[in-house]
Length: 472
Ligand code: NAD
Image 1 (cartoon, rainbow, N blue to C red):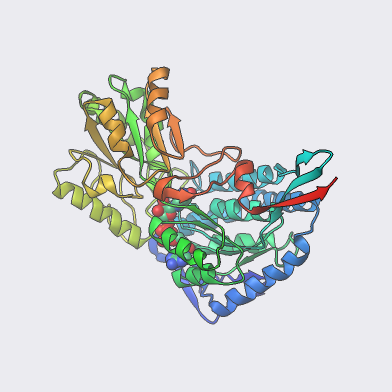
Image 2 (spheres, helix red, strand yellow):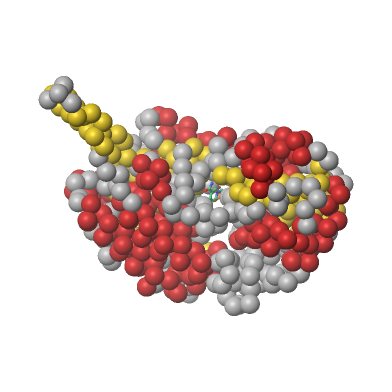
């Protein structure tokens, strides 16, 4: 019998009427644990607990809030090994490399750094006529909904700025990777006041219940564009503020005449991080037609030395796709590319077995208009698309409704800067891709998101402005 994980509400363990098996994507015959199926009843209880805790937490001191963030960082450090193993088993990413231990390090780092930020009062006017102060005040109960690709660090991105600014939180993790979040929140509750952070697990319908619940004062959602649109529509009912971090289809442009070997490592990990299951991964690479062969050779040469395997094996650098839905989608997009003239210069077929492994696949011979280029693949598959004119490449990179990140690669700094200025995205990288840091605001434009996370700008998203305007 596999281990049962439980919800934590108001500082207490809460059981469910039913549980579902969570399987290991590297071996789907292995049940990692059982997740409670939370219902509206649990959600009501969690929101009530968060609302109760908010009554006092909204007036907590700066010191108490900083201490809470540091306590979270401490838990992430002390329990890093346990949580990393659970994360690897349910998510699939390797323990090493840019995998579970890396994610746990990020959780501790983000929690500590975010705790150190503040939004001090601003004196707007101090004159003979009036004294005006702008304050940042909390919003109330934050409803957090997370995806399955980076479940723990995304939970930290939602929870820590929330409590740092005096809010309380109810989080609903993805039904594909609930266990590590359930355990992490259980551990947080050993060091935080009850009700500050509550977790309910369940399916998509529970997410929808959360976004329409009248007890929720702010929604922070990370997931697909399709769901993000529904979340935004639900939020309209109560005029609830939302932060949306949605899907990306990031374009990268390699400037003409460059030596692709120089950029092979950055291009490879920029696209294959977490086996491509990263919102801000490079998902379309544009290269000059004269540089195609050299680019293919550089990238496939690099890929040949990167082992993909069971994440518990210390030698693995890349893991499987996380779930059957994603596995089938990647297969479908590659098959569609093949049917539209695409050639897989590496990979191109699943490796087989009771698992969701799909090999690193570089696809040439397709262009804009083919699904693998136009849609977010979210897997270890990269279309390499040719151009003849750099301005045309920029136009094609900007043509889609996505705008998370983009990148330009080249040795001419001025030309890189010129291209970067014209690429439409929340972040444009030069000679790198998919780098995020807690002091750098991050967010998408167009359909890739609304608002930013991280830094003071991200913190401000968990507050409203309150003006105190006194007669002099
Ligand atoms: P998803 O939208 O299917 O699910 C995300 C979460 O939303 C899950 O917890 C799910 O249960 C919940 N949900 C589903 N339907 C809902 C509804 N109607 N109302 C409320 N909640 C609902 O996304 P996913 O497949 O888990 O994640 C992959 C997607 O997330 C990709 O598109 C990826 O690019 C995106 N993502 C974006 C970022 C970012 O920061 N921009 C980060 C990570 C992932």
